[in-house]
Length: 99
Image (cartoon, rainbow, N blue to C red; front, side):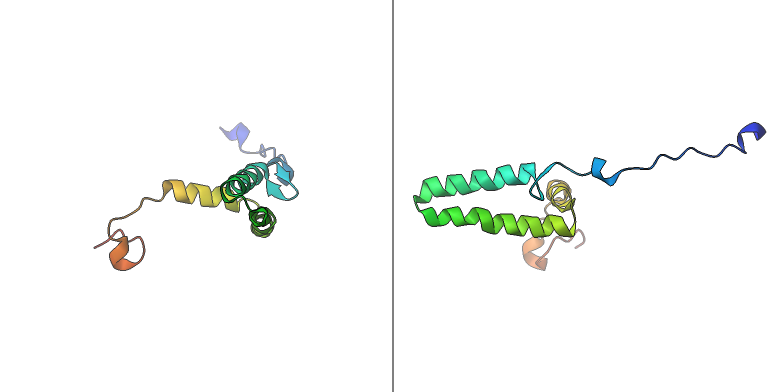
């Protein structure tokens, strides 16, 4: 054991670009696909070209969120998936795990 005490760990720098999700103009691909899909479905249902304005508006919102934190969509997805809903939410106005 004494022979390993002087050995320093070898550190490899992590490039932040390797941890980012692939983006299209600053917004993750999956979010762009969802925005385009919802916009097209809303346009087909409403038959109004005004619904096509949903895409640029929602894109600006997503872009500002991703500019603030590039993992915010992942955090929101995990939070929505893993946080259980409680039965007393209507009483307290929020999720409460106590009485």
